[in-house]
Length: 287
Image (tube, rainbow, N blue to C red; front, side):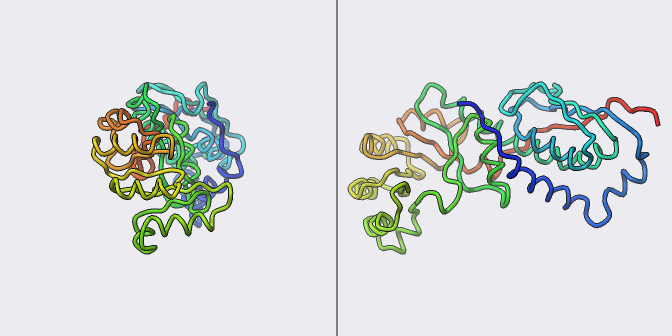
């Protein structure tokens, strides 16, 4: 499935807010003091490590908002792989704007590329199985759409985007409701006809109860591989199965081998390391 770009109406407020945060009350006083207004430059965005690129439109817009005369030219698209030392894009235009937007552009590009790269590592680990890697709602406040896009750029899929697009009954809901049966019946009575219901499961007894009440999906949380395999066998054909808890590139293949439909990993968006990308000025025009 091709990677669909995020609409500009989603990207622009995020980039604009990040630039305003950086420019503060007086603008880029360092660059304005040192760099002549008419000076033009050419710089490159260069990968310091290998990985998967995501966030090029964020970087492009950061430079354009700093100065509309700046252009970003690239031969790669989001979702593409880069080697250490390779050039991701060229940035051409007024030097002041390039330097002013540099950090904002890199913040988005490094962060989103890091998420895409981490996702790709899990996707590679489960290759050949039916399991899909998905993210969670453990995202940076304000950046959920961007970070979930980066997961897609890495070959993964998205879990729900918020509290309003699916019902996920977790352990605390179950405790307050008085049990899985009570929670599911209340959820089913309130849910619209397009709303799916998933239940977090901790043991076989809870699974049997959730399946009896017709849960659409079950979140098999922190189960051993043996228990996970038994749960998948019991739920097969009756509910979508999702495994979560301590998922790494090393453990993902064994989890996928149990036959689960989905493997979710919160760390993809809350603690994936940024991909190291830098901006190097290569040409300075006379002036």
